[in-house]
Image 1 (cartoon, rainbow, N blue to C red):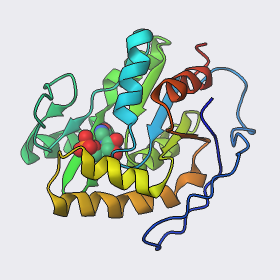
Image 2 (cartoon, rainbow, N blue to C red):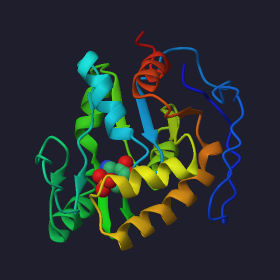
Image 3 (cartoon, rainbow, N blue to C red):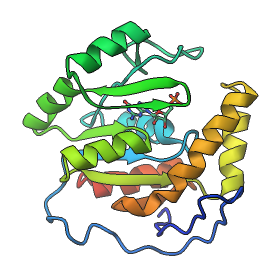
Length: 215
Ligand code: 5GP
């Protein structure tokens, strides 16, 4: 079982103190029926995509929204699978036409969730997962308060730094900006219904499955 916890992160400190506590499930106010829409959020490099990939390998019935982004593809990323890659003009058009359920600017690039595919899956009763940043999670919370909001936290601040610098996908200045964004995201942990600490991909995926009412 991964740990669950409440947040105890200072906002401005350089290295938020990892004083994790066992957390009550903050969904006490929610109806008992299984949520159909689940939002998975958490700082960059915490391992959200890895958890989702692991989950979907065993449970292909879960639908994962493919986001649109203005970020350039990383080596190995496939258009339509990891993201729909577009340029600023293409993104502007999606925003102007109200085609995004939510969108955010994150460290120099824009990211958004195409609205209609999500609505179609939800109407068909398909368990649906969004993997998005804090700003997007807040927008979904406002628009769809019934969605289950899950925060994926690193085991420690040091581990997040190690993962972000170690993956080597971003230049040092972008790593710094992503870490700065990470501090803000960690401070927002109490906004979420439940927190999973990413100590093991398998454990987190199992816990997420259970939260989605699928195990
Ligand atoms: P990356 O560039 O590392 O793929 O993603 C940067 C951040 O944007 C991550 O925290 C990721 O979860 C988030 N993100 C990916 N897609 C979306 C989206 O559609 N909307 C929002 N708001 N954030 C997203």
